[in-house]
Image (cartoon, rainbow, N blue to C red; front, side):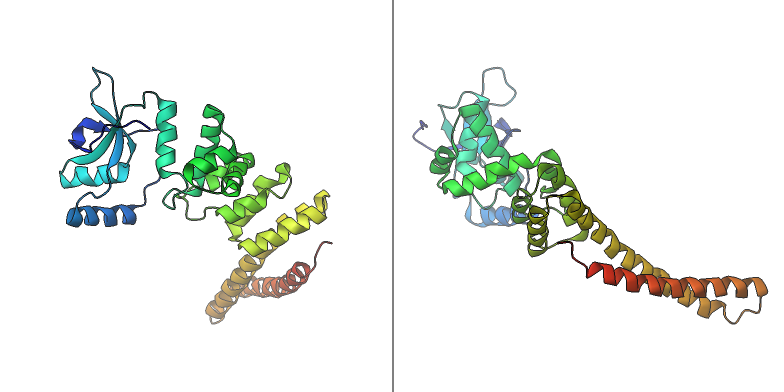
Length: 283
């Protein structure tokens, strides 16, 4: 890696973001914490930039250190950076950016997955070679590269911007089931907030029962749980309505409330049946 020998203090306005960089998600609390740190102690770690062609609006483009650059911009101070003279194209710039950040805790699992896949495709690297460059184990890289097989829909569910996002552990477990069943199972995980242990049980059952009925049962039980919740709420609303309307001497209202009472009894019976079904396992 060739660099100029010294760290330069560069006017932040002369630097532009690298829009294709591996990091796309910036945690706001962490950014604010870094801002306060730089405000008090200064920018301790320099970033990396590359020089742009003559005629560009900006003189430099970031390779590493966008969070630090953002903070320096807000504080109105120069950004300390090393100018990489060996980076002249986007492919090598992306690789350098990932090597500077890849595998760190501040990159999300989704960012790591997408970056590893891109680098392997663009540079023809193996999982072992990527692992060596970022200082991680080959298994660590292989596990994340494998998640690309899950497809765009499940990958989107891993987005850190989603409150109900799939965790790395959830996504890894989904690789154990057939590709035709992954999307629907992922939706069940997100919708019902299944824990990793619950998903593991489902994937184990799915492997044991390859036939479709086992998979349909998973979806069916999810519907039963929601129906149980809705039926309980409906019964409570009905009972409350009967209490409110009981004092009103109106024949039509009385007849209507009698029907509500019958519905409540039916809902109680339905709940018993649903609970019984939920205790049934498909072998």
